[in-house]
Length: 295
Image (cartoon, rainbow, N blue to C red):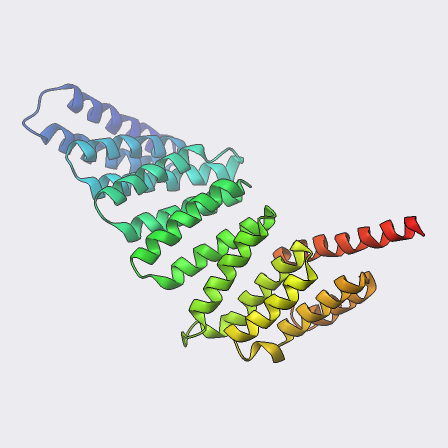
């Protein structure tokens, strides 16, 4: 390991010597880029991810000087991947990784590689989600969705939009989440590959409707969902939402819990649904307690 670190530093010194000297046109940047790349490989072999990341940034700058923008963007991505390894090991912030990926995204946009820009916007969204920064995560997932859509990569665009809806609901931005889920359901119902996911998407939209606490709006939404997917009315998802809406109307926590338990015994509720449904349950419980206090 120490030997690889030493070799890496030697390559860096040689690269910087090249850059400080004279060269014809871009020759010194070509030579320096070659040396920086060798240095990065040494640092990766030594698992010195921080140093590898910093040298990849130097490599990216050389590529920019040579107007090799695709290679520059790729080097920024390599830097980000190195920095991500540090954050996993020592739980430090991912600022260097996100900054490097941002640089890559900007370059890919500049050279018209929208699909690549979308891919790394999505990765930035995932990084911010891991850092529990949902606002920034939403920003990048939305950018990724728009870019994927412009390239007609519909499945990836839908995945990113669903992440936006999921995070918006966590932030109690229920109307935004509902609008996204319903739009995806409408778009997916006529697609042979996507139509089987519609019931689950409508269930997510319905749970967000429950969180708003308006029983009339929930009833109207269920009618609307049956128009989107005519088979929805006979589904377990629809029956669950109807039962939960009834229990809300009756302010019956026991009935609410029973409906959830029955559904969960056959189809496990994920953490996101459980979190949102617990909010609804607590709201019903609070109303029950308020009424008990009045009597």
